[in-house]
Length: 309
Image 1: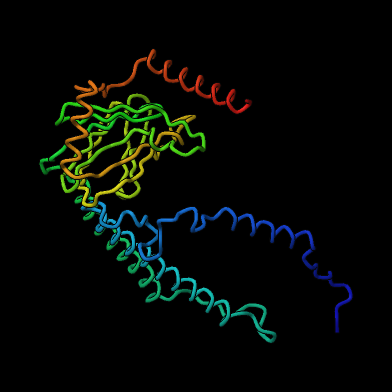
Image 2: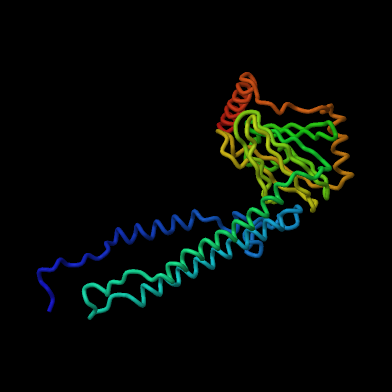
């Protein structure tokens, strides 16, 4: 018989259901689609397809990445499966007592779920430490040394061995075609070991070429460096991966991996343009920083005027 004094169970209101559906749709629209990442696929673990064979280290990084997420997915499936099984197998039934039998502990199970996770973490640590040591090894003599100087909000490149430099200016993202051609371009010779010496003239930046699967911070007053050997000719994109101020999103650059002959031709072109020597790698002074800020404000004002016209 139904208990008339019992509080009736409330059903979810239409407003609550509508809100849940709206939240789900909003979440789905926030996810990246294939159009947002056209060069990433499951075949490559959703890493950029351009990274395949791009450097001597991308294969090692891809293997570590794929192994890590496959192991994590396997553990997740096991845990989710056991959770669902426990919920279904030990759900409360109609004739069950108020409380199930109370137990204290199971020593073998407790030993199992203590030792196995420690072993898993140990294995992951071994492979990460092994690969990190190889990726960050700079003991070998490089064929080419490039000083990368980050600044608000662009890049300078000093080609140390050729005694020339190239300088960049903040990208002007107008949405029009041809913007990428005005970005600073870093030239690298294929199959030559390159050392990047990283400097910042103002705040922390991060040098990132997604296709190389490698990025490293540029810290003011604390230079960093790493080495890599590009193994595939082509055009790649680079950017700053550290939030560095108002125009962080416009701190972009191009990368061209070319033959040794084309690389030397570019060095000769820079010399012919009078870009000999090297640009400063030390911290910028107050006057320089003020000039950068004024230039950005001026460009923003010009863009507003053009938009109103």
